[in-house]
Length: 506
Image 1 (tube, rainbow, N blue to C red):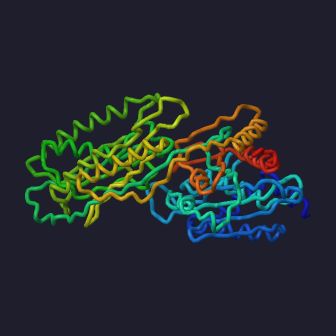
Image 2 (image 1 turned 90 degrees about the vertical axis):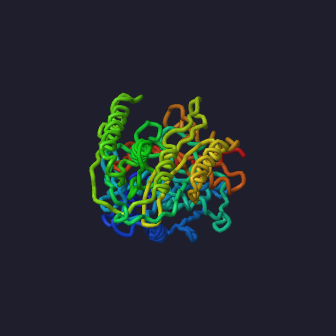
Image 3 (image 1 turned 90 degrees about the horizontal axis):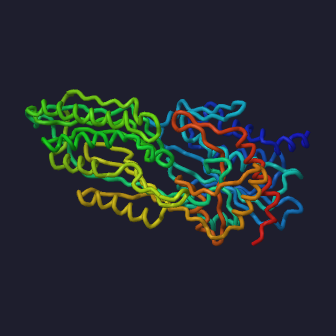
């Protein structure tokens, strides 16, 4: 019976079991979804005890989990390898982007489909692959010393990798294999960095009773496709906040505007699909407001419903509406002008593109969120770039935009560019084994995504880092799936790498 169980654990089907046991219970992400690291640890402890596998499990204060597994007999002289993937925690329970209550994972014949949240992204494949390796103990799954690292990604931020203490875990490996890449048949050896900015200005709204002869309007933009910063920012799709800023800027050329309320966007990662603003104008300007908004609406719809480089309308469901609304507290002329100007100036989209295929040189920015409170106006922005010096210069520009208008600018999260290492031994080894399995050439990619291997390897002298992963189908938040075939190939590749790691010449 034990031999049968061990044989089952060497097959790809064991990965489905892992995914179901850790991720697919109905209440796992409807309630207490932040405790995923506890389920990973409990699963490892229970399975290692059942199969008598000597694992050493540690967890640091931020939530990173580190596991050490000794080499099998005869493989003690193999070099150690660090296998790494992240797990996701979302402290924010309410979101217009993610449906935490409706999240699900579906196992089909050819696909594993994840719906509702990015908690079910390709990272769960990496988690499952690593867990399958840790709980295997048989002759056909040979390996030397294995170190496994499950880093925490909290609210779309790689806080685990940024705050990793390699000395605390005493990481010994010089090779790192990550499973968060996005295309089967490719090896990632470099990615972009990102930075998040919060622009804020203190402001106290004026009581509406003090604003005589004011008419209040509610302007809404909705129906946009949105998209993800890394994979869809270059599609020229509209940003709802920027369209609102454009309309307000046009109005402010002809009349005084007083902002009362402005909302739109959600998480830094996603292009805003809708935004709503309430503003006040002098009653004498009502006719001009209608005239200007109709003109802006016509221009915007013409641009986004007819122009595209991709063969279809950019925003077929774009909706622009406005109506008069009831009075409410509003901000002063000075504050309103400053907010409209800054919102109009903050860039959105691809700001720079490389002229060489698969070379670094892209920079982009997502104007992600706007919010007003009874004490402040806040704008949220996230930039991305894959050329470190140019990216740094671009971020300085974003800060200076806020400084010019007297806004407080806070850059509280920066993730560095992953610059490929000069050493190629591990890359050549993995590429050769990958090509043997797929029987075709393997691409070496530099992605415009943000991945963790670069920042981890930077902390460990002479570490060589790579990333592999399944091809992603679909886009968050509506649906996302990976091919069962892809996972089978990755499982086979991982076994081959572990079995032959002693072939690397250092």
